[in-house]
Image (cartoon, rainbow, N blue to C red):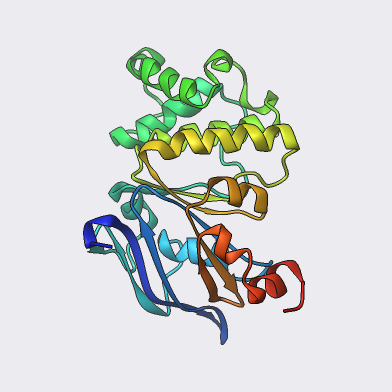
Length: 251
């Protein structure tokens, strides 16, 4: 794999919290254009790795490179400006605004005037068509004028993906995108992620193994903050150590 094929690389990534080692010596390589899943049992350190990669917490040790540039210790806003944008386990939308307004705010953020809430709405209408196109991309255009709080949970997660897409990310980090969903919503979000992944790189934390199997090119398995196994699903799912750690089956 050449350097140009790698969009994100972490070397020796570690994080200690008051003597507790949450992440230990993690080496991670995300190939450009891939869907890379980060899995493991509860407490394995998956979300901490996300927080380290996106600058929400500083590493105790290690190095992070995005597009070949060392971004170790950069704040989240700078990481996002570089093109690495994440979602969260809890849907992060404005519940009492319409879907269109939510996406428009994300577009404002990219333009650098996201805090100009005092501007007259007519000055923001230039963003409407772009916002509608993003809603179309996640199959929500017909709901553009609905208030977000009225949406079912799965559609809120789809809206969150639209607001993430508004920042035009090169790499999307999705934290538990199907958490708490019923089967129908899971299927809808899986198809949405597949659609988004056609021209972007995705790194996701996901508990649902059927989702991981369906979407992932590469899987990294964490246990107690360290990498236990890496590879395609066909290989990782047969690893006795993974079965013992993740599924509870003894090797």
